[in-house]
Amino acid sequence: MRNFLSVNDVESVDSIVKEALELKKDRYRFSELGRNKTLLMIFFNSSLRTRLSTQKAAMNLGMNVIVLDVNAGMWKLETERGVIMDGDKTEHLLEAIPVMGCYCDVIGVRSFARFESKEDDYNEKILNQFVKYSGKPVISMEAATRHPLQTLADLITIEEYKDKPRPKVVMSWAPHPKALPQAVPNSFVEWMNRTDYEFVITHPHGYELSEEFVGNVRIEYDQDKALEGADFVYAKNWAAYADENYGKVISKDTSWTISTEKMALTNNAYFMHCLPVRRNMIVTDDVIESERSIVIPEAANREISAQIVLKKIIENL
Ligand code: AN0
Ligand code: CP
Image (cartoon, rainbow, N blue to C red; front, side, top):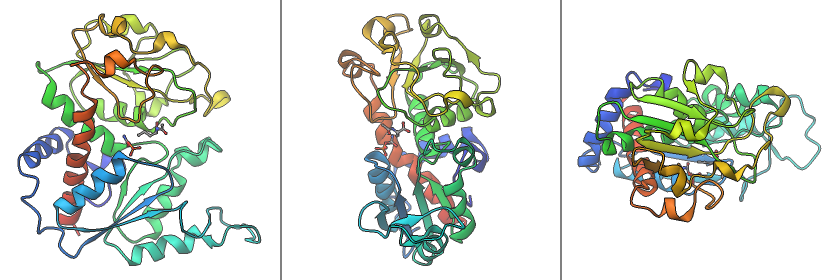
């Protein structure tokens, strides 16, 4: 594997999930593989899980790790080419990226959608510059349009918990006070389209995701109907994608919050969320604390998804 930016960097979703489950049985088996190899993790945005799990995964493989928060202790970066840099930005991304590439063997990048330009976000303007100018393999640690390490962990988790070959998985929009990217839902949909699970998306009108990701997936605007018979409920908020409302919160309808009553419509479904989650907006205390909530094992699998990806990248160096 050269880069890990989307599902397209994976030869077979089924195989990588199986390999990940195998790795989980003995995560220290390849502790020599990453010797003298350095992972540099660049954060343009905050993180708890990605930061810790990816570093842990790299350490399991014997790698060295450097973490850099772009917003803490680093020169202010200009990202637009052609700008006369007479303001507060000291360094250009076009120098910073190749410099970063000098000090590592693999680069992880977290760079969310900025919601300033739909075109820039959906062209992955920041992430693609790392691919182009760092000279090193790049791992997306959630970029503007996708969060593949999260989705791989989600699939590992579903494989561990499912009790039938073809579970019904429902991805439901849920309310949130702030505008959140579409990266997590886009990725989830993109990977689900490569499985043979029964998959349904439910969201209010106006929250349609990009057709590029959704393809032929069933969209059900009636959340109650979508939840009927679900084996897994995957909750997530995202801001509107449509041109006229791009990056906007157009509903905070709390009748979409995943509650005990909503879960009662399902086939005793497991509750999933990538975290961080706003309680009593996305999901009630009762549901997230219930026996069917698997958000913590889901987060734990982030270590495994990052490790299988790093392993494949190191093996290809
Ligand atoms: C981010 C998002 O929704 O994309 C990160 C999730 C992993 N969430 C927030 O910013 C709250
Ligand atoms: N799920 C996830 O990526 O969490 P963080 O934003 O805390 O890394």
